[in-house]
Length: 331
Image 1 (spheres, rainbow, N blue to C red):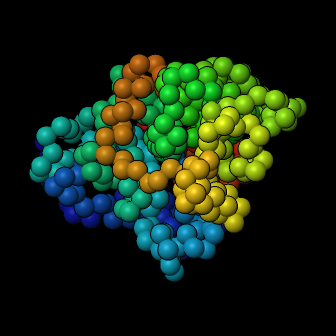
Image 2 (image 1 turned 120 degrees about the horizontal axis):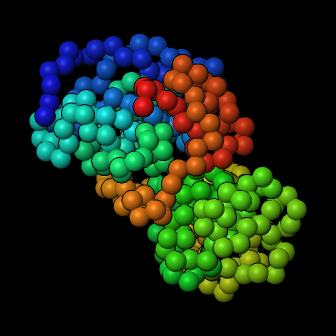
């Protein structure tokens, strides 16, 4: 079902016109996105600010501008996670109608969900599970990277995996998805987050403030850095013969990328990084995990759209747990 709309109606959005600090994120009027034939127009109820958004805002290191835009961001509205109600659908859409509650992930090549409305391809969203609030459904970005790592290392039932930084958006999702896959999960977190990691399914939890996890004498099939703060050289003693170190961040001087390339050349595959994946169908995969009770959101803080710059500032501290939600419309 579609409804007539006035083209380019104004909406409120967090607009970014140049690279820099969160001070440059301004909430102002912006044109409503144009609805394509294969698009779903969503009235955004909730979105997130995450490390990816902060990285796009800063465009650091400089070579990231090759992807984001050389002189200024290619897009003016960020935001990858989205949950809301379908406002209208394109002419070729048959799976959704106006009023449906949906969640999913926006493309990084078009304007995102830090706005009252966003257009996304039909394949990038799914119907929300029954009983889930909008602010509990904006978990796709962290789960997307977590799932990409687990697929890259080919995690199997019975494997032993250590996840460093198991309390962020990626880490909390990875613990749950690895547990659901039947792996034995060791989570490395700070003191206040031990109970959280256990509640997410970790078999063992290590407090990195009180214990040097690299000298525990244990070995694992996989070690994953979910926050970009350790290195392969720091953790290689933890790996079984044939074990792999995986990272979700490039690391200092892009060392993880370079090591992954070298490991591929030498065919040791000791260090791996996930390749960019397609978001088509991913929301439906997460819906099944959520309905099975295998995945839930961990919400740290909630901000209104008007205070989104404060959300960026908080995420940049590196102290967030799980996700930081932006409530755009009333639930």
